[in-house]
Image 1 (cartoon, rainbow, N blue to C red):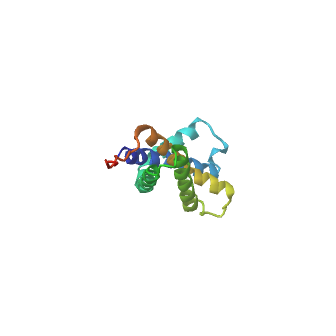
Image 2 (image 1 turned 180 degrees about the vertical axis):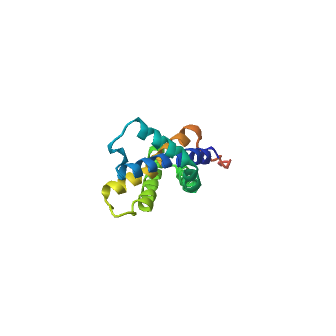
Image 3 (image 1 turned 90 degrees about the vertical axis):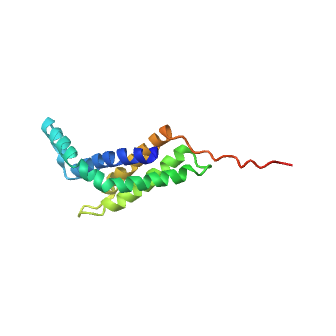
Length: 144
């Protein structure tokens, strides 16, 4: 249950932050930065936070379920699990967001992919730290 709380609380926030940063970077917002621009960015971030949770909660919980499934496979270590979950998040976000607009390219694909990669890997790492793996109990069969 902790795993789903970590993914649900952290994933949409970090994903929304990165999505806003990526969109504003691709539109040329950060070419002339000063303190007022950063202040506007933070205001927009907190005004759009409710939408980040509205549209990002279900994908974050889906990533938590994938992380939980991969956690029960013994040969897969925690670092490989984080990488698998991150790559799935990268692919999902990249294909979902990067096919918009006339300026489709590799930079746009990678930046939008990072919107899924970073929250998935960060949440998977935190879930590893705070959620101990479930160890199956011995069956108790007696040997002859």
